[in-house]
Image (tube, rainbow, N blue to C red; front, top):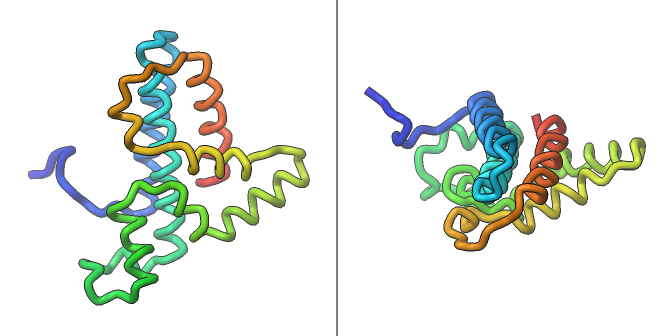
Amino acid sequence: MTDIFDRIRLRPRQLRTVAQRRFEDADYLRRSGDNARANGVFYLGGFVIECLLKAKLLERYPSMQRVPSPDRLSEQDRQIWSLIYRAHDLGQMPRRLPQVRQNLAVADEKQGTHRLETLNSICARWTIFARYSPLMQKMKEAEAFLDNIRDLKEWLR
């Protein structure tokens, strides 16, 4: 019997499902309007991006889905394996996804948007340590953050 605490390796489709569910959780907190829930919106929103980037990494490096342990991998492959299965380092993930960055840059130029800049900003700023922060954000800021997540989510699917 499995439960939500079991460590399992997810496939890209499953990671996207998890991302959608956590987005809905963040949106539910946002709709509460309660400033005390704003940090949760930020944390869950960043987690959405993490799941979607990991799905993209698994698609770019499909062999990683079959690697039981990184012990026999090259140093470069070990880094990728770690990004997918151990790390929460959003700052490193887009660097391994040049096609995603290129697609966003092209769309930004055509549409006059700043999605690549937004993704880079979120990835540089967000960290799992937000879950431990005693500081409180405002819901107005969380709403803007989640709007950016909503927009990026469509491009990272």
